[in-house]
Image (cartoon, rainbow, N blue to C red):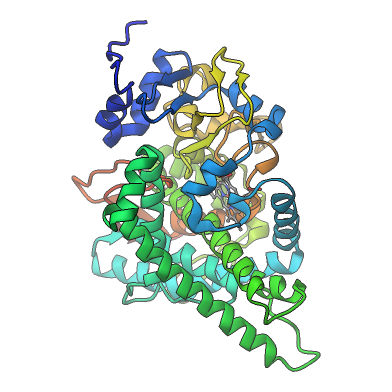
Length: 485
Ligand code: HEM
């Protein structure tokens, strides 16, 4: 134990946290490596809060699965994420179970899957390609992170509400709904790291992140209400016998008892916002890190292209674009492995936290009390040698492949080890949706373009609830043709 931060008797070890905040993710890796996977951060005596940071798979399994009932989301979580109302992320018990069942049935339905694939394809043709083609032709710098965020914002909004907010067009407009989501996420992150009384004072005084959150909330509420009103109007004008729209909002309203009840509006508002947050940022974050990793690992890029080239030839658009269908992509093992590997090193949700209802001893030997926040650094979990081996910090899709047969098969890794989609009964409901979307964009970009990070551009993770690149992902793209590199 040669770790030399001094414990501070009056304010705990929190100053250390603030000192390390700018590079919190890598700091977690260093500390957890030193302390064999788990470290207790003592809170200031007046805050009555300890944080147990862990990347130990045994602790994950214990908290997320074995002791699920003793680790609810709870009041603390609801307080921090109050902007999400009573939606699926914020609820426990029967309310959570009902919402999960309903959301799962809708997401897994065939007609929704078809809608997803069609929406993806249309947004690529009408939004993504024109923007990328223009940048490639002009040789201009593009922030791909921003482009991916716009893509997933538009598509997620279409899956959920049926309406296209039009974020990804050639003029790249400012969309208040989207910016408000960014502001809300930032403020939510600050609530995680500041003692509650500090952000409550900020809220009372109407300053700082809390003021930003208040304004963001007003924008989100207005935008979501607008979609609900438009949808009710659309449904009321529907001629009987006409096929209903396939989006989730239509399904939620159709399943409801009344379409004019105000209480339903609150439920719809919370459901829309929760699903928007679930789908938009996670997928665009995953795409951004994947594209960067592949562009900096030529051998991986060569293998992905080799796999894509092995597919039977298909139509190309007039400007030489090759799309890949969901069926084609579902058989590609190396592409799947490259995405899993990217999610391992850069999990879009880098932290998860839980507190126990009753005190309990974790497998690591640490006691967690109701006032203890058990904080899982998902980012650190992907980089622990004792979890993934000596090469844990390297980008190696091969670790996901079992070589039985010509192409190999994907190796199953339990979610308590690979936690990008959460673990236990609250595992992500959109995993398959995300992979469908990720694969179609990833294949199209890698196959059709060479991507190069602008020289000198600083690629660093940000500090927020979603793992983005702090300064965006500034690239130059050049078009390539269908030849193996
Ligand atoms: C790469 C993409 C994605 C990643 C990495 C991801 C990750 C996660 C994580 C970590 C959670 C747990 C959050 C928590 O409990 O606080 C979660 C939950 C959830 N995700 Fe995803 N997600 C992705 C895409 C999606 C998509 C596209 C959808 C919807 C279509 C979705 C729907 C959900 C829902 C509904 C939950 C709540 C589950 C529950 O509490 O029972 N996710 N996801």
